[in-house]
Image (cartoon, rainbow, N blue to C red; front, top):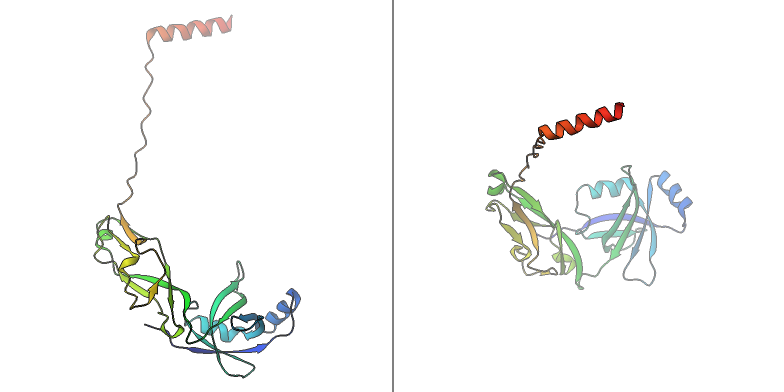
Length: 216
């Protein structure tokens, strides 16, 4: 299933630097850039609340956004990078990539596992090794995600890239690569008991003689 386009407004930004970016954030806006179809990247300012609401309902990497800059004609873009504060729930910066409807692009599409593997019910553990895969397609064909049913996986079974039904879209991955697998339950090893050292009568006598020499 492909994503529907959504709209986001922005204003041109003519200031730069860390100080200007901090002042912009304090005013409820977010610094951003858009690049791709023009010689130089354009600096923008976004409404932080508007962007946060948008991000809460889309998959950022695969959703085509109609970006309206200064009230102009919408420009189709994809989010290429979102910078976040390392420990606070705060957005810092966004990079947009402008695209063309008739030119194929490469995007990372998320993989979602559905169902409960039969091997897990038998005590095994489901391991997901890949959480997304790269495809190449037109912007209007970008899938929102790929679902893989793991219900039939027994212990030792795996699902590979070749099992993904991309509906004719080119998958740019090694089709033999493993996406997920059910591994046997971990076996806890019991700690080995320390063997008691046998003390012979001769050893005891030697130890006693050593103590006597030390006292003399």
